[in-house]
Structure formats: C-alpha cells, structure tokens
Amino acid sequence: MKKKYFLPVFLFVQIILLKVLALFPDFVERYYSNALYLYISKISRIFLGWIPFSVGDLCYTILFFFIFRWIYKNRKGFFKNWKTNGLTVLSFVSVLYFLFHFLWGINYYRIPLYEKIGIEKEYTKEQLIALTQKLITKTNQLQLQIEKDSTKKVVFNYSEQKMYEMSPNGYGLMTNQLSKIEYKNESVKSSLYSLPLSYMGFGGYLNPFTNEAQVNYLKPKYTSPLTICHEMAHQTGIGSESDCNFIGFMAASSNKDVYFQYSAYAFALNYCLYNLEVMQEGSSKSYRKFINKGVLENFNENKTFWKQYHSWIDTFFEYFYDKFLKFNQQKDGMESYSKFVGLLINYDLKYDVIHAN
Image 1 (cartoon, rainbow, N blue to C red):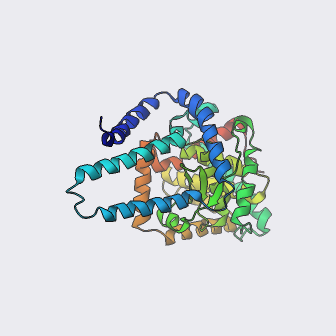
Image 2: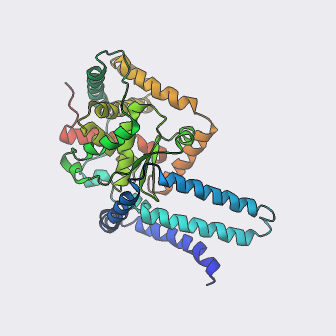
Image 3: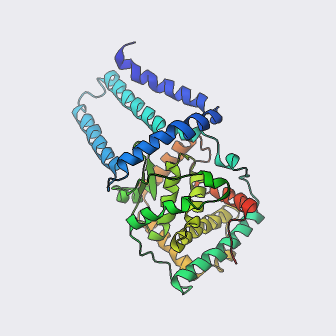
C-alpha cells in the first residue's frame, strides 16, 4: 500500500474497531478507563496544569492558522486536484481521530455510571415532583443563608482562579459509591475562547488533547462551581454528559463552601423545573411560586446572559454537538444533559443525600 493511502484507510479501520469496542464496555472499563487513561491524564495534567493559560486553546489557534493557510494556498485548482487534496484532508482527520480517542475519547465506551453504582435511571412524575420540592427547600435555605434576604440574588465575590482551586475539595468529600472517583493533579483554565463559547452556547469543555478543563469565564459566576466540577468529571474519565452533570452536582454540593453548594442545588432545581415542563407544559409554574425571589433572579440572570448570544451560531453548534454525542454512544444527544435528573432521583432514593429541613 502506498504511504499516501495509509492514513485515510486507517481512519476507516479506526471507525470499525471502535464499533466493535463498543460491544465490550467491561474491557474498556478495565484496560483503558481504569488503567491506560489514568496514566495519560496524569501526565497531561502534571505537565500542563501549572501553566496559567490554556495550552489547548493556544494549540487550536495555531492549528486553525495552518488549516486556513493550507486552504488559501490550495484555493486555486482545489477541485482539479481533488484526489490529492482529499487524501490530505482524510489523513489529517485520521490523525486527529486517533489522538482524540487514544487520549480521552475511548471513555465514551465504558460502563455507564448508573450500572456501576447500582441504581436505576428511570423515574416517575411523582418522584420528580418530590425531588423538586426538596430542592426548592434546600436552594431557598442556601440563598437565605448567603444573602440574608430572600429577594436578593446570590452574588459571588470569588475570582475564577479561586473557584478553580476550591473545586477539587468536593471530590474528596463524596461518599458511598462515589468515593471511588478521585480527582488529582488540577488543570482547570479560563478558556481563551470564552466569547466564541458564549455564542456557541457552551459553559465550558474538556480539551481531549491536553486534558485541560476549560471554563467560559464570561457566564454568571453562580453557575461556575457546577461547570468546573462537571468538566473535572470529564477529566476523571467520564464521557457521558448526564454522568458528568450528576458527578458535578455531587462534587459541588459536597464542597464545604456554601456558595458551591448553592451553585449545585440551583443547577439541579432548574433542570427539575425543565423536566417538569417536558412532561407537561406549564406544570412547573405551581412550584416556582415557592422559590425565593433571589433564586429566581439568578435564574433570570443566567437566562438573560445566554439570550444575548443567541443566534444561528449556537443553533448550529447545538445541532452539531447533538449529532456528535449520538455518534459517541450517547443516544439522547443534547438531551443527555437533563437525564442526570434520573440519576439524582434514584441516588437520593437509595442514599438520601439531599437533606432539606
């Protein structure tokens, strides 16, 4: 086989191998997620975690420069030389596809979290209502504890860097089955692309090539602790968005800092209200009247922030990421984010982790 065909052919070989690998989650769990990946992630975070800026974002900038430079240089006669250019593109995609999966992406094929911790993921409307009521009580308590006035929104005075430093604390305090999830070697950065992320509709992301957790520092601060803990969950080797939302909630709510707890409970409450609406339009209204005005102000603050960036751009990226997730073992796509509510309901039923007076 000629060298120019090797990488394009290897791309299709990789796709087939991953489809086969998806049939053996136990193998992935044992030999990749709990073995090889632990060494890969540790090395990446030790070498890059101390650098104060996002190395991954810088690499993307350089990569984009060379991509556009190549396109510009080959713009004349591009389609005339379609075979050569096509092989070049496929070779490039093949290398990225390999690095993505080798460095992190294979975690998409591991055993689902709900199976490992022995809970169900389905729930009834009555169970959702019961959890919503508990979350309203707990979120109200935390808001009042912080602001001393039920009508004031919670304002965070922490810097982004301070929150990055505080976030790992919650991981060490998780109990029961979740105590097995460890977070070491911090590598959390404010994304250099926070403005583009806002237009794309993303609060953060994990760079799979550098294992840096990237946070959109422009969004409302009260949402940051949950986002940080969510991205840290990805760093521990969890691919599923619903699982990361669940772990993010448990880590932030386990943190001794009351602001972190508020971020977690406000996040979970908002998703429960959303899921009630999905079940029956208008069904969340009767519960909103019991929520402190200050909490609702935070909800509106977050809604207003994302609304100002809404355009065809975030619509496109929502569609693109939905397809990406479905291609990578998450059949619910973007809806998988809200599926964490089922995990929280069943985990609370089993361990009674949400205590509201």
